[in-house]
Amino acid sequence: MFTRATTLLRKARRRLWMKYALRGVGGSDNFERLDLAYTVEDPWNMASELERARFEATNTVIERAFGRVGSVLELGCGEGHQTEYLARLSDAQYGVDVSAQAVERARRRLPQAQFEATDIFGQPWGDAHHRFDLVTACEVLYYLSEPDKTIARMRHLGRNGLVTFFAPACGRIGPHLDGIPGLQKDWIYHGGTAWLIGWWRDD
Image 1 (tube, rainbow, N blue to C red):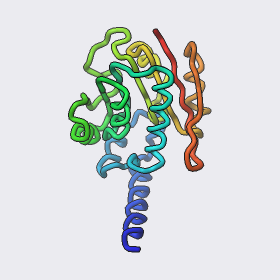
Image 2 (image 1 turned 90 degrees about the vertical axis):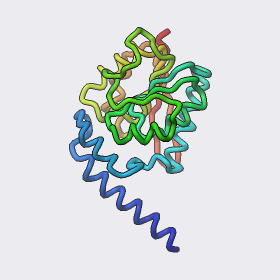
Image 3 (image 1 turned 120 degrees about the vertical axis):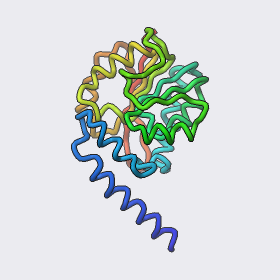
């Protein structure tokens, strides 16, 4: 009984904090507020069963579409929760996030991976065309004012690309993907929640 009450209280506190921290964040490049969210650990509840199901489903798509990949660049890596899953099917992991607090926790979580507190335009690992085998942006594009520019950068840096986003954002984010040649789409469902997943090959 006490454990359940503690869990519910923690969940309520997280929701209240995120409601405050994320004011004005959607579609605005408001990186300071995104960093503020990480004043608490795991602000997005990435350790939840719901998010773990999304990570597993994303890995399934990656394995089916690309097989094992040599290198993966993850945009919006946060504290490295999904990076742990990407590490199961890649040889080298690179992650960027605009929150230095998140990146520090990601480094502790996966010391073998490389993380930097920046965005895709500031990533320090080389600008060569198709520098990475796969570039991912999971639950990231809705926070950007110009997602098309990020997608173009993903296509330059990655031989393959993959994005996921929460179903209600389809109207805003979906049109930015439609111009990608060979784009494939599917849905991820879990517990009444749906995400769109899109992937492509540029090689």
